Image (cartoon, rainbow, N blue to C red; front, side, top):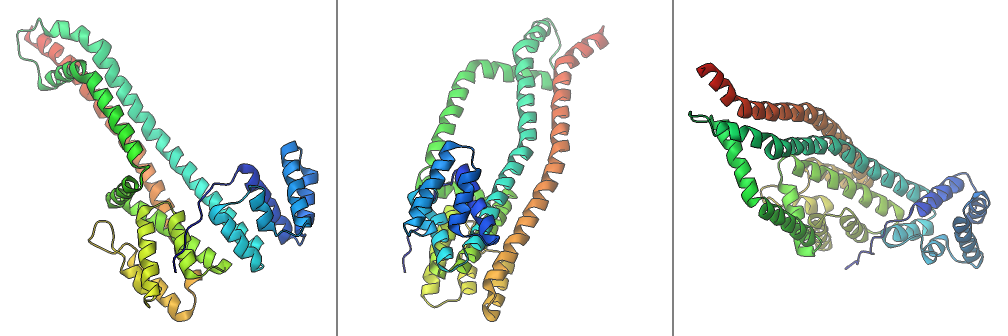
Length: 357
């Protein structure tokens, strides 16, 4: 069966707040109309009150909640599909609450990554500024002095002078080349073929590729379990989860898994047959395959997928935090070595002259 993945569209902040309100109020036993009326009465924003009135009118006309949210522009794509299936099966609050919690977890992870990268990026920018300052203003002063020396300059000093000459001669061309390359890569990764190559290369990177696998695998397993529990069949759940994790490698793997399932293989067998982009091992962790096979034997595939997703997320967070703790002192050490090398390159000829005198 071929399943076309609905186009993903990120919900607005207003939509997320509305969904959280509906989840809380339905869990408390209120009806949809009571929850929407409460949302309308408690709102202080004219736009929000207008949207609430629109939803109330649609639901009083007999439309379902999911249909009303879609017509009002609050839900689309995979979120809308999940809402419709969960509402039809009477588990809307549970499934949408889980979906909102997962979105918050993903947003928290992105904030954690940005916060952790801010320090090393700042250190690298500081190092570049120091190098630029030395080459632009400090080195010319010393260069006139070096020209009066009769002895040969030390290797670090020669390297620094040659670097300055190279930058002055080719700096503009290098800057344009870097800019053109960056724009070319940014344009290429937006195309399907380029995005596929970029993602496959990302999976092959030492260290980072392992983190990529853990991150994608965790999200993929979590989404499949959620959508199957909401009422979708496995073919639909695999298609939607593979597209939702934003990895062309997983899109291709999901299509292969669905084809093998249609051919009569079990999910565990289909997972084990998916090759990694490096071509030397399986795409999915062997332990995940074993867990799925055990779940198929006991009828607990979805709970085990959820448990695996939590486990991978916890492992990834621990490894990321450890890497960040090691990265900060390492970068400070490298910055110190750079500063020390610059001082030696500048002042060793001066010290040698003083020794000769």
